[in-house]
Image 1 (cartoon, rainbow, N blue to C red):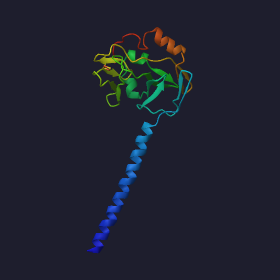
Image 2 (image 1 turned 90 degrees about the horizontal axis):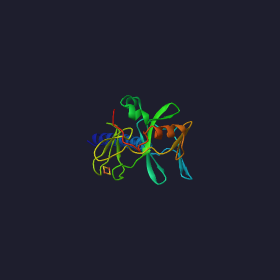
Image 3 (image 1 turned 30 degrees about the vertical axis):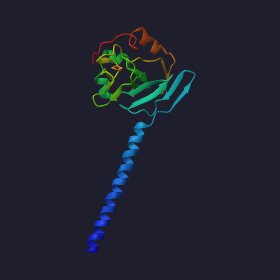
Image 4 (image 1 turned 90 degrees about the vertical axis):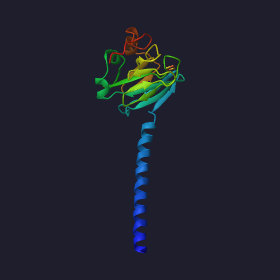
Length: 183
Ligand code: FES
């Protein structure tokens, strides 16, 4: 009887230890997803090191007091992008990114990213945006705004204008004009 109890105690402890180790690994994985990318803020610019950015993970930076979303697109996201989405892509060392000020163009709430359908939902009044930040449905009148940016290797400087940014503005893809969701 007592031998039986001892065996059960030992099995219980072993199972408990396994659960604890599993929990630590799960927390470590979650923390990794929460960790911000290394960034530096100076004189109206935010410099973000994208060398460790993972695909389809939402990174939130701060630029001039505003939240900015950055996502490195995976192959599926590139494939599902329409022409207008592609025109808002930013090339960083061969990888494709989306980056924009994370404020809903209806009344300024911060939309949430859903990485399974790969879209953004604003819970305030129900606006939906595609992965490039183009408004798809609901009351938002414009895409979310792409701020000035410059790319230097795997570094993104938010707040500095580059030729790529100027072209995006000149062609009307920065979010200052309405865009059709064509994906
Ligand atoms: Fe986003 Fe109204 S503020 S839908």
